[in-house]
Length: 448
Image (cartoon, rainbow, N blue to C red):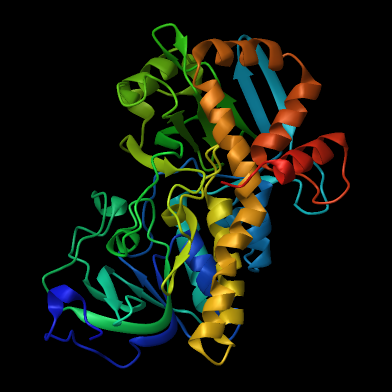
């Protein structure tokens, strides 16, 4: 009754420690943050990760003050000697204009950002969850949900990840189950933190929404004397022939002799899916000064790409014992492509809801609390993400993108407002005029 249909009558193996209050599938930033806060709440948490640490992940490696707040809230030391490289803000280049915008000074967020390679970042967050009491099993690929007679998830089945198929760090795009015996893991609730593809969500019938924006990002690393730049640098002059595209290129110094260099584009452009992104990256870098070092002989890694699931592109975020966090729930900010902060924030919100739910004596009471998770996400991001979807739809028109770049960048006041809007960095109450306008727009815009 509780086995997947494909394995009826053939119970997977069990071992001591396979049961937990909560199973978290995926040890990226969202899953590890959820596991950390769940463990701190006194719950027994089991995290199943298909790869082994350290592992690679396609990302810009830039962390805004929102992400820094999450890291400090988990008690993670952010020392430069541990690989954390601080930055003051964002430098924007486009239309012949160059402007530097410092992160705003707010009571709610620190006034600095960071850069940290995902090769070390994800492991640091996962180890923090372990220190809090979460149990982490690496090289375990979840193969499907275990459902009860009501279709509610009560655990997962999994196998050891096959050697050489552990993810991007091993040269592949996703982990695959090895040939060993399938095991079952039981829990009262399951958190899907398994990324954009979220195979567990798909197995539960949750598919991506076509009415939400999608981005694609590619990046690589170069040895460069600009590795210690204390601003995150973004370039808006990405073109397909003569048309300005909705997206940006970036150069983020890691402070270790290398820079993370890449570009991100949105599917609101007619060119989306028809552009050779790697060729575009090379053309863009060919126009950089030679002394910056962004040449093939200085490239240290392959050019890799990934999808950016934006604006709640998979819903509902809670159903039948399953909660979605991070990329699994499409929580990338449509305005700027930032995903780490929202993955970690959603993990914390999910943990808070789960802890309250599991304190209830029965399933009905617990489910009543769990239904508040999608509402909490909508309260936090719903109106803002709706604004973001309208924004990316608008800049998908080349003429409007040209107009915004030409007339907005030369005006520092407009750009400071725009930076607060795009980075979602405002005081929740009070603040300056820009904060009040952005917060009001987010409140009055319907959360769809």
